Image (cartoon, rainbow, N blue to C red; front, top):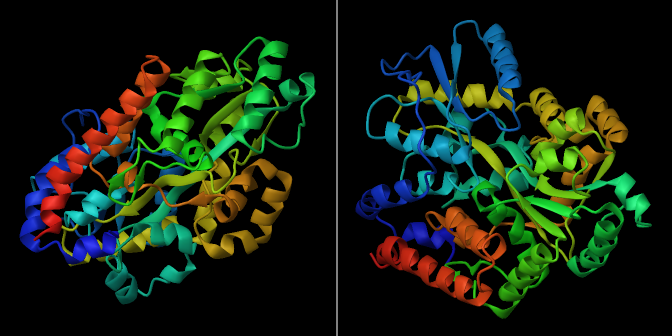
Amino acid sequence: MSTSSLTKRLGAAALAALTAVSLTACAGGSTSDGGNGGGNAAGDENKIVFWSNHPGKSRDLEQELIDAFEKENPDLSVELVDGGANYEELAQKFNAALAGNDLPDVIVASDVTWFNFALNDATTPLDELWESENIDSDSYVDTLRDDYLYDGKHYGVPYSRSTNLMYWNTDDLAAAGLPTDRGPETWQEFDEWAGKLKEKTGHPALTIPDGSSYLDWYFQGMVWAFGGAYSNEWEPTFSDPKTIEAAKFLQDQVQKGHIEISTDPTVAFGNGNASALLESTGSLGGLKDSATIPFITTYLPGPGPSAATGGAGLAVPNGISDARKKNAVKFIDFITNTENTIKFSQKTGYMPVRKDALENPEERKFLDENPNAETAIKQLNENTKPQDYARVFVPGGGKRIGGALDKITVGGQDVEKVFADLDTETQQVIDRDIAPKLDK
């Protein structure tokens, strides 16, 4: 069943009943605001409170964009608040704020958290605000904008958007007698490359994050390349033979020492302790500044589509005044405009979110001089598809899948049993938290 048909069968009462379960489930670990929520309890309509986890270590850049906005809009001020160390912590902080009146004006909402907020009426649909404030929503990249489309309405604006990328140490590739201008075309070819790289360098061919750091997102592309999936819409498919095959391949690569599960894979790769890295395009900016080795970026191995879109957008809470909502969309439109999305993209590695950004002469010059930055943009059109419901729409999906992947990689547990349990657990959440609402 599509998300659109899901909404049509959910009444207001069902949405209210679903709020407590879904919002709790989609939140991550605990966070503290140190006694200062940076809130807007008085409802100051001349002040915009922006909660961000500063994707791509972008805090200083976000403040720079805020300063430019305030200069252009002297009647408005913007307060940048640390919403948490990651998307999940920010979601939990927002969940807590929903119980009171101290709501921000703009929040960062990730690929995993935005849907539950929209489903539960915690964030506001933006289409009428775009129209009333003369904001051209068609100027956003269609694929990225429509990732926040639910029941015919948009509940977010693309901001720090990414895909999975492979990063390759070209010195290691050359030493192993491998091509230095591409990555492996399939995961089977990766296995061949990995053996040669490990033999030549003595370290793992690939380093990837663990289950607490979005391994569930990265592994999704491998599953697709093997012909499997996490789910078929609302039907979990972790026990599908192709999904199992992908999981066993991952486990085997870890056991052979071809793939290393790391708590800090970006540092390991940047220091030359692994030949390749599977990470977000949002890591490109940091690696460009800190890596001690030469590298290229490539698509994920196919056959494609074999990479997931991800990252985050910006959303507006539903429980604030209309005047504050108008200020919020005005601010969002500014910090994601063509000039600023180019600046944000060039400094962090995330993708530009406006269509005309690629036509900008300065951006075109930048991409020509920095081809690593263009890989994600090309891959978006050629090698990506929407994520599986079991990860992004079922409450707690990413955390649940990540925990299972830790069991089979770090823990070495039986793949078929772990994934059968994952099927059962996911189905239980759907039956408990979603299916009863579909029948009303």
